[in-house]
Length: 454
Image (cartoon, rainbow, N blue to C red):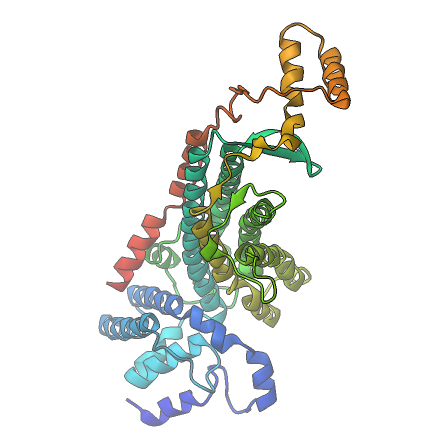
């Protein structure tokens, strides 16, 4: 091993020759990359393992070089899992740190790992591997919240509550419908997430700086080793996909966030004393420093705010990429700032929402309050119409009875059509959710990663 060469690598950029970059320029151009790249470290190592295996298969590494590189990369991967991996001061990014660690340990063999690739396709594959892994976590968290909502829908399916239009009492609804509506919304949201996963799970490795390589790279092999569905075939498009893919995923995350934000608003409103439809667990509320009676729905308020912020994410990414021509530009680095942390932000909201939804108690006596009597007016109109009275005459009669104060509601309602109070179709919605979840094919990816790392 040539110690002098390795020490030199530790103090220089991968691309540096004789010019030394000014310190303030370095700080500005690197930005928060060293911190954000820690999230990408295990994926960078996996991408390198696949690349090394492929280089040996096309004769650019010997089998012996491949084996010692893979062993060293597995050791580095272990440090990413234990929390011991760091990007050292003066090292530009995660790619440089991994190559430096290999070169320190293995000398010139470590320098061979970059043949046939650029940091452009390295970061692309890192982002793809990171994103598909985080999409899996989000899909699982959505599924768990979905199941909690469906469980509550079934438990309280016979408990009526007012339905509203224009925030005015309108018609009878039920807690079966309320919980179930948000469950079905999540089932639809998962379809969009699956579409984002499909475009994510394509392999950009081998596109290098966006124009391919004169080396005889086997891109099918790295695609298989990393568990991708296919390649991003055109090398220029592979680079064009950076930013576009993050935006597509951001739209999917924003859709889920929109559903959860709306549910959080309902929960805040319905738990207030003026409604008193639901009771949040005491341990899930906070108090006031001056008013001893207060039990504040802070968790749902923060869920609402954070999910609303997440709905701005597609716009933020669009504004970074929308006037860039094809090819790589440093602007794309800025996407990491908003994109990488978004998964944890949404996951926290989903998990907190699930925790409280599982523990919410429902007021089963809402309709004892006569202020809700008028919501049964349509039921009476329909009863008269069924008995033969023209609908418009029935509508007028019931309206006049309400104005005169002589309307007496019949609260025994009977709805039978699909999706109504008496026929929630929760089993069909569950089947939709399960079919979508199965289509992701997370097992195939897990198997490929296990094979690569074993």
